[in-house]
Amino acid sequence: MALGLVALGLLAAPAGAESMRARPKAVVELFTSQGCSSCPPADALLTGLAEDQDVIALAYHVDYWDYVGWKDTFAHAEFSDRQRAYAESWGSSRIYTPQMVVNGQKGVVGSRRNDVHRAIDGAALPLPVDISRHDKMLKIAIPPRAGLADAVVWLVTYLDRSEIAIDKGENAGKTMVYTQVVTGRQVLGMWESGSGASLKLPIPEVLAETSTGIAVLVQQEQDGLPGPILGAAAFEP
Image (cartoon, rainbow, N blue to C red; front, side, top):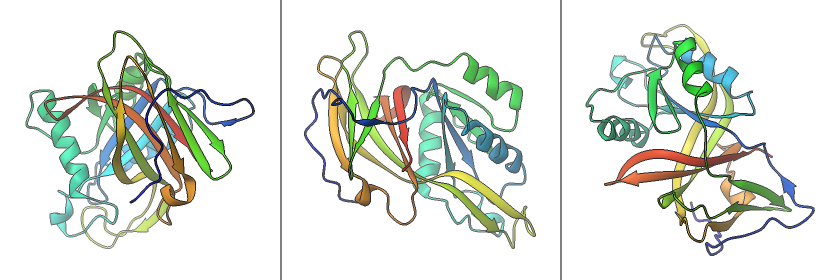
């Protein structure tokens, strides 16, 4: 996806700009599959979390359950690789569904409501990310912040809702509603603690037919593996 990006650097949102959602305290990433019988409760829990203004909820559908006879219509190998990268960064080789990762730092069983809410209750994002809309453009401003290591700025697109009839696999015969389904990820640039970052995104190019919203994540990396998410913001037209 080719985007018309504007150079990175600090950008102040102009007066009168249409600002997006309130600053969240947590990004919750659910690793799930249409072929996993244990996943529907976690899928439903994520739907509820997405209604909370304090949470940015994202569902990554993995492909390693496709062998059971049903190919997940939203799955990508890249999403399975992201889950493996989290496990590796924590010194583990184990991946499973459903798993929720909170702010890139803590993984919990995604169907254990109390554990999920405890992880979110103790979460915080130290870096503000501002998204404002100007006609057909989005302006993203991330201020400098001393004491934090530089991080990667990611654009994540998602579909807010889809209903899928499943014919095979562990959920055969069910019609499931999936929300916050990740449709793509790409690097926008780097955030530097000393200078911050700014960029512009053309809304029509970002939100293609398969996407209804975007999330911007600022996430640290170490040796190519994902680390803590420092800040995030979401936009839906």
